[in-house]
Length: 94
Length: 451
Image (cartoon, rainbow over the protein chains, first blue to last red):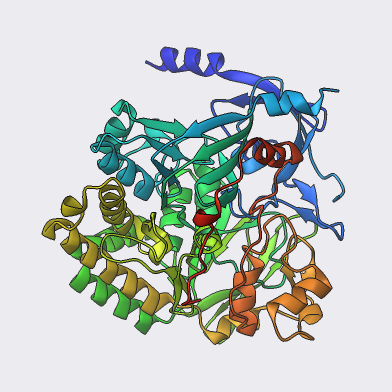
């Protein structure tokens, strides 16, 4: 049985990048989850330059905004990681 | 660069008899009930999977036995179409505009059922904007979306039964739940529990089981976090228990003060709401009809009441909206509805935010997180609107969803309404409205007198 789960986990592992650094991700997880996994507790910079991270987990507070595949202002808590995804965090506020 | 017309050509248009907003327990229950009538139904949700907050995680993760029969019915109904990752940005009579990853989407509807659930009440305190400080429901949602917390030291704080549920989710994911700090007093908690035994004995039992499962994590009453500390992220917090204070080192603080209904859409359409226990709830009759013709409300929009309320109100609303009024008024359903309302009343009575929670916020504490507006910047103003115009309070992406509720508790400012678009939206999404014919004069929204 453990052999089966090893195969499954190897199959659903893939790579993304966070601020240019490669990160291995397994399974269906949100971008916030990947950031926590990589110990990157910052999504954006507030208008006065404070580091901010996810708060409400449901796409309402907008604190978890990151740039994903060049598209800014994406909600990390509501976006699922995909192979090759490029995440950029801590960008200065618009 | 792709021309704008490319985006417009991805504009998908749908028509239906009944549009249901939200695929949590209320929306799913409504969709399943309405589908029997054979009318065309669209069920839309901004998430990629059904379940809302309570049943977050998708069908594969569901453990509640009530989910599968509903989901089976919804999936197999030929007259029911589901739209996922569809975020509503604008709505008017008979037309809804959604933003999706694939581009804009419009739905022409005749009848509308609003089951958009709730969000947390977050109140400001020093350090609450540090990374690592999140809502209690927020922690739960983030864990269910895969956030790793194994071995992390977590303090759960704030007020309400949600704290126990969040603590349990964290514990089950391998976190070290250091304590649960409940603002209310021991006598209030005891009152709530005995009320629960009376109105919802099964829930009372669930509460005791939960408390037992969390027995290694102290459950402190009359306690609150008065400050969170850290440089770039949370490192420790100051916990007040009664008259005493102590420092607690931790990795995550999950802090929330109960739930608030998402009423923005209902109010935009003119549905009457009423003041209830310090906040608002949508006004409905026994068939879940709002004050506006052809609009029904179900679940948390009618006052925070949890999953049982969502299920029965969703069912009643779905039956009523699809012309099955007799079934909607069946004694069995109406009994369940009354029982669910009794639980909602109990929740509101015992966990209503009180004046002491105002004192957590210091002058230099930020109240509006989107625009970094502090309490001292707001003290010069008498009402939400003038504060908003002068400081940008509530003008950020959350459009006041969090700070307006905080300002109600802090300053007694009455609730403010959103203006469309109700969420940040791409210009290309809004352009899709140009492709839709203007609604005829007779269907313009009537603003309810009661407001």
